[in-house]
Image 1 (cartoon, rainbow, N blue to C red):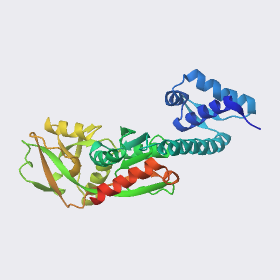
Image 2 (spheres, rainbow, N blue to C red; image 1 turned 90 degrees about the vertical axis):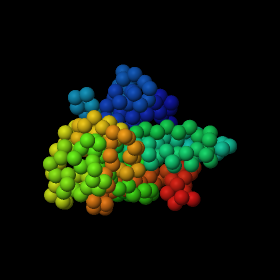
Image 3 (cartoon, rainbow, N blue to C red; image 1 turned 180 degrees about the vertical axis):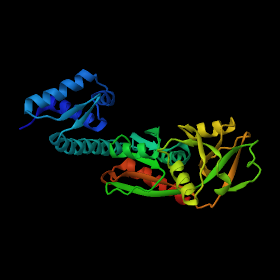
Image 4 (tube, helix red, strand yellow; image 1 turned 60 degrees about the horizontal axis):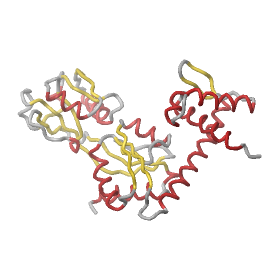
Length: 295
């Protein structure tokens, strides 16, 4: 028996609420009002005599039955998006919309430039976030492809190694270490640092290296972007650490090579395995491989 058009809207409201963890989040995602989302979910619960969510403060948690239903609605949504991408990519010159999640502009833009040269009619949206948020966006179908700072060990995810990035230490020109050109981890003991937020892959690699070497630094300031880190260093708030490929020269700041040079992040391009056949995703991955291999 067909459930009809109204049930389709109700199921979309349910799926978006389950995905975002709140009715307000679902409303933003679908461009609807929160009362509309609430009414759709209440209608489903009343018509079928089920409880889909437990209300927890401002958010919601799936019931056991709700979790089962979400598995089904998630598959349906993914299949619909797959069909849409397939139809869009069948048009001349592969028109469509590709959504990327990336840890910053430096790795994604060379790939994007190469991709756009072959697919000028494809609209591309890039959302910047830390590695954890990029992966979450890929898993939640908010990003078609993600560019992040570590390999992903998840059976659902296809992971393409892209680039190794050694870390460099940033110092204000007036700093005592600025004339060294090269520093060891031991040289950094007790220094004040401007660091990225805890979700940053660069910070995680740096802190793991410090811990292994028994070196302690002081976190003076936390900044939400690498550009913010560089500016804070330039203003004399502490030392910083970034991937060498993300270093943009600045007269106020010196970039110091870090010894040992095995401290590095490893950029990967990821997508869901069951979306590998979608033409736009497939072609972006080919552009990433060609850029990596210098073809």
